[in-house]
Length: 259
Ligand code: LHQ
Image 1 (tube, rainbow, N blue to C red):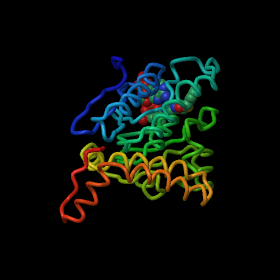
Image 2: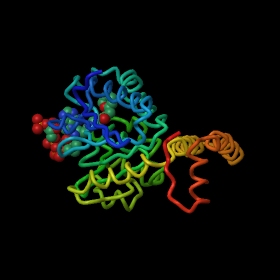
Image 3: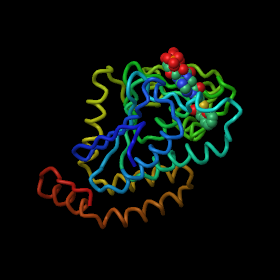
Image 4: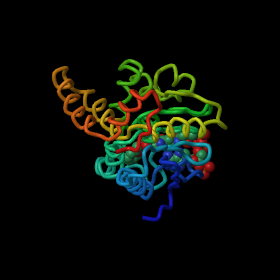
């Protein structure tokens, strides 16, 4: 698929996907939703991709649904969310490779949900996070009501969703919405540093760790312990595990290949 709304850039095992409709702060139209899903599926398939950065072109990260694409009231809302947004969120979580959001500017509505569905977030000092939905009489979607309370607690989630005020990057850091905040010019360097480190790590172990953390969000202890045991069976059979132990015993840094 030739991308019209995304940029795909791959180097040293790190794939950078850039949402590229800067004139509308990378608002999501049908084409972008389709392309993003395609790009994430491709990232899963390609063994050379060992970590992913998701960022936005221009001054915004993503302003959520393109509100000019259809007139308010004319969306088949449930169908639109089920067919455009939910598959992207599912794919981000199902992608068994680390995904880092490099949040370069405002992340609003479903654009904020996209950032929250990534594994890690680096934000520039100019970034902000906005639960824009209730501002236009809508309900938080695309996973916002799943991730927000888990990240910031239920009371704060209510505040962010009801009052729909932008959360500036330093406050987002304090709340645990982001992992790092850096000056704008250093954003991609920091994101590449994190994603690069992860791309040279034990890819299968990261993928299985992601599965365990996500699935065990809603497990009981017995279920969580058992699921971990099952995944360890798979991690224990990888070449990277053998290499990790060898490197430890030989007192040298490991050379992980993702196998
Ligand atoms: C936009 C947008 C945008 C189009 C900025 N669309 N053009 C799911 C399913 C079905 C239906 C509905 O929704 C959903 C999920 C959702 O995502 S709902 C939430 C949708 N998003 C929003 O409500 C956010 C709307 N945008 C804003 O509130 C502001 O643009 C923010 C706070 C993000 C940024 O404000 P400013 O920095 O002041 O920028 P701006 O407003 O001047 O925007 C720059 C341009 O981008 C402007 O175009 P223009 O031609 O006037 O320069 C905006 O119209 C355009 N733009 N967001 N979502």
